[in-house]
Image (cartoon, rainbow over all chains, first blue to last red; front, top):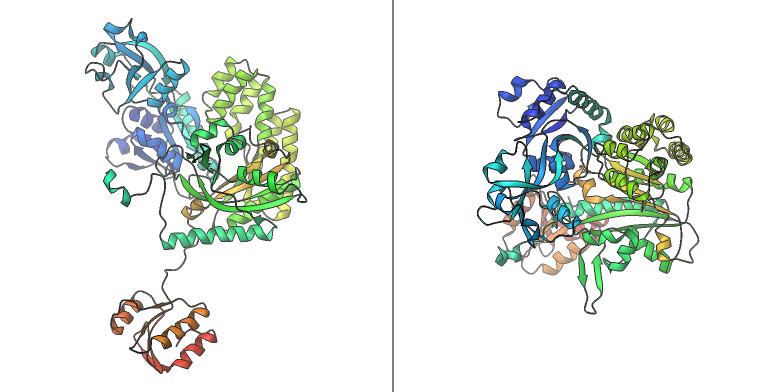
Length: 218
Length: 421
């Protein structure tokens, strides 16, 4: 029987994802900490883990290269992939906010169109469209918090955890667009053609999340 | 670089080399032939339709996903994204007088202009069938059985068809007794398959714990026990009707001999505005996307002026191939022929006779010496290399053995159906 493949995100959510998989009994800590391999065998060979960049993870699951995946709600909101979102894994909590330079905290709403730099162009566009406000979106891949300082944008939409990055860049929160935690998603064909194996993974991950054993990322 | 555009094809499009073209054609033909045995006759509709037609069939949001163009008179046209709406238009305008039911098949390229992305083709071949004019379970059973037989005919080694019903989900939603705006938010989450956000949303709307449990149980509601569980979870008239219909359908499918290939699956979520009854998908474990999709769509034809129940499905041919259909053998000609000076007419007459017997014959047009022609052809898998002289021919086979035969014998052998010696 081919192992069920679970895509695990590198980066921010990786620790939490690995801890959840460990609690669920699929992975042993030594295995994933001791290797730089991207394809990891699971504890009993029935499951294997594929480490993927967050931006690619949903593609793997949507196309069936992975049967399941662990991803943030932020990615799901941005990409509307055709996957089943079945479990809130509880870790990786953060908020998506609109932030403006501290000095412009009062005047930003009058700017039209507002130039907003973000890694979440679709979420941002939906937000402003629903408020009937013109916006010019500058799509970026990283260090979005620098954009206002160098004159690239009037505001940013970015993830906030402790708020330190905003403070360090003299930005203040102007609005909250979404909240995000890690989610377990399933490929629509795997859900059907590997129903039993997938259902077992879903239940064990659900139980692991409920036990609250997965630590939230700092 | 824009200056090298002439070397490129647009995003989401692809060229198919001879082997793949042959495979696509073979799969399409097998499916159309299978459908023909069930009485489904192939029709052709234009690649370009008026935008209005496609929007009328599928709703205003479709327009975002179409390749649109404006003709010289300022009319907005679009490349068809699927064939069911064009066929509905065809039936309404040209087949109004036909006795029911009407059984039609189609095979053609469709175009989806939405986002391109990894593995997202914007043009792909579809083959499908529509059964128009019957609202019975008998018709539903026929279309599902035909779908199963089509995948088998196409050569898919392992596959399964999941059979659901939009009435089930609609029944649960009706049971929630929500006002339309609230129900719309619940539907939106269901279309997105967001079963995490569903619970808090339903709780906010004051839904009963029983309904919440029923909806959240949906992703797992498949298999032999699905109908039993469904009956327990949803005790509304619409829910009971669905369970009864699917039970009856399952028996009919057993009678068709396809019961083992079909699994009842109430977790299938498809557009309720379009589908009015059964919905189904075919898939194989080897591929992460479905091979075919279909269902009952009783409200489409009335949009074109001739109300009529209808049910059908479409197969994604390129996905059938991706799933690993039967591999055709490596191609090579049966005979590679060259001729000596003065023997052109004799050679071409031989070639004509051999081709008439369905052999693949190529004739040397590069003017190379025969030895080179023969060696290369045989090394690349040709059946025989033949050099035609005035009264005789030299025939060499793959082992390098040569024989001299009379021309008449060469042509006669072909006429008798045997390959040349």
